[in-house]
Image 1 (tube, rainbow, N blue to C red):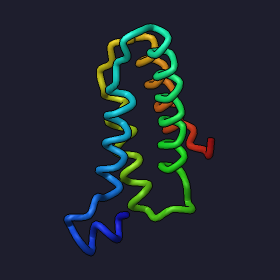
Image 2: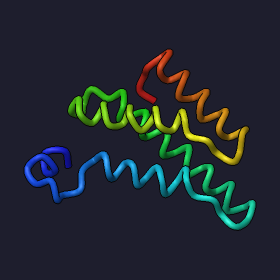
Image 3: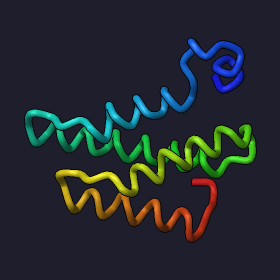
Length: 102
């Protein structure tokens, strides 16, 4: 995606895709408590995969950089649920203190 975007700026790039994924998961509020809990599980799976992309040496450095940028945005994002936000922040901070493949 990075190469395709570089060849044609009209193509969608990885930064846009990951931005949309984050916006449409972490930025989504459901109508009922059950759906909200399911959404939280989805959010944590997205977080897990972003951390894997950020740490992987099997991807281009640009991919690492874009995934890291998304993690930093998530770490500063204000969420309605303070408990969940605290856990997301804890996991991201732990990831940077002790980087590893998850």
